[in-house]
Image: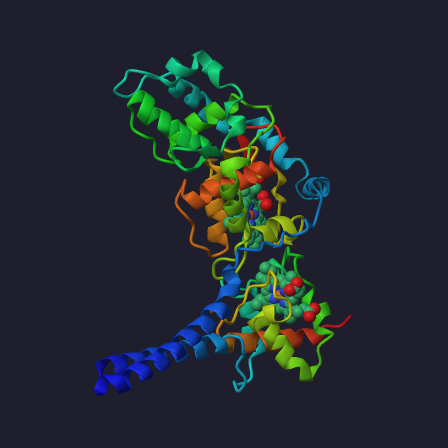
Length: 130
Length: 280
C-alpha cells in the first residue's frame, strides 16, 4: 500500500512540476490594469528592468543600442496588441528563440504586476510626438 | 494476492511518471543544450571595433597607460620573487630557469596547454604552482594573491611581443570544445551567454559600455584595471562578467575556467603578448 501511495505522490509531484513548467510559457491574463508611472520606475531601475541597458528610452542618459528604440517600436502596436507587447516583456523567446533579451517573467526578474505596469508605460510612449 | 494487483498498477504509474519526467526534461533542456553549437556571425570586424573604440574613448586609455601603468611595479616585484629562494629544496625559479628567466623566454606563448598528468588543461598559473610544489618544495601560492599574480606577470612578460601560439590538437581538442560550449551556454537569471555579447553584439553599446569582440581578450592579462584599482587575471574578469549578468561565478582555476581560458587564448593566436595590460 505504501508503494502505491509513493507512486501516486510521485505522479502528482511530476504533474504539478509539469504544469508549473508549462505555465511559465503562458503569460497571465486576468490581472488588474497596470500603472504607467510605476512602470517607468521599473523600466529605469538598474536592479529591475534596466531596459535602457539595451533600448533607447526617453530621458535616460547613454541608453544602449542592442535593442530597438522603444518609442519607434511602440508606433507599430495598437491598443489591441497588448498581449503581444506583454509577451515581449514576459519572454521574448516566443518571437526570437535566440534573443538576448532576458526572460523577465519566467526567470522571475519582474513580477506579473510589474510587467503589467511596464506594458502600460510602453503604451504611454505612444503619446510622445514626432 | 494483493501484490499481483499492485504490480501492474505500479508499472502503469511508473510509466506515467517517467513520461511526464521526460516531457519536463525535454522542455527544460533547451537552455542547456550544448551539443550542437551554432556559432554566431561576428557583428563587427576587429578593425571596425577598433574604429568604434577610438571614436568612443579617444586615446584616453592609451594616455593613462603611458603616464604610468601601476602593473609595472608588480612586474618588478615579480622579478624579485623569481630570484628569491623558497621552500625545502633551497631553490628559486632562477635556479632552474636561469638569471632573468633566460630559459623561459617564449614559454608563455604556448599556455594554456594539455597536461597528461592533470588529464586536463594546465594554465601558466597552475604551472608555476606545480613548479613550486614539486621542484622547490614550496607552498603553492593562493590564486589571485599579490605574489601569485606578480610571478605570473613576470614569467609572461618574458614573452612580451611574441605571438600567442596555443595548440588545440590531439588531447587538447575536447577541452577546447568544452571551453567553447561554456562560452555559448545560456546561464544565470538573465539567460545570457558570453558569445551573444562578445560575438553577436560586439561593437554595440550596453548602456555606456562598448562591448568588445573577443579577438583581444587573452593577449594582455594580467592587467591593471582602473575599476579594480589593482592588477587582476583573465579569470577574475570572467568572474566579473558572470557577476554582472547574475550568474554564479566559478572558483579560480576551476576546470571550466581553464577550458574557457584555452578557448579564448586560442582565438588570440598570432597576437603578440602584451603584459601588463591596462584597462578601464
